[in-house]
Image (cartoon, rainbow, N blue to C red; front, top):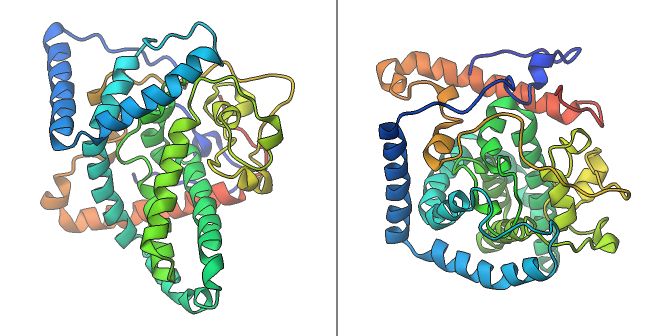
Length: 343
């Protein structure tokens, strides 16, 4: 957490994208494997007991999308019961509980980010916007901040660890979009609190967030529709499939979900006309089970009990981490257009 970076000639350690590729699957005994499966089952069972929303939403998506995937498949021969589909189904069933954890974390991030301060400062300007234009302006601001948030999660190593869980899937389809760490996306909380503090309706802002989540799930579908004429204007499965591609030319591209506009403006748009994405996933190894994936980005944080044992030291560490994170964000914002991470 305390690593420092230089904003000069872009040394390799500054833009580290993946850990050493020689990392392999862990060799575990049956006791540990059984314990991991038991803990995963408890999370899924507890989530369904807490709320059946994840189950209902998964069934609705299955009914609406799977027939289309079978009739018009992007990758022919990809079965509904493809590798690790049970893992993604587990994430879908656990989504109410995982989302609750993420919501609590997002609330904390929203408060300590102080994004509500600039929101309050521009509130007099927002009050001048005609009421009928408020949803449009609010959506454009929310979508642009969502673009930058997504980009930060890819290009800043400490944040990428959380987002890598989502990108670890090697098969895109109706259920793959559910695979995500509950803390992946908490960085969007400052955008949410910023809009509310600026005077935009909490209900409308919430609708924006829900719309982005549902659209994001749909864009993972295994459908062959290319929608060429929509590419410059609206996010499509083709665009998002390129975002998930593990081909070098596609890395660090297509961060937008609803609008490709921001990728076009900030130089991260990638939609080749002569080929289509075919290889997904990431180079680094993440164990294919929910427990390991939930813990994967947390190992870098250290022992949380240090906050109690060494409160003042922890505050200092937190400030240094925050300052270093701001520097990395600045580097991402001003990095050369078209730059790729070292592979």
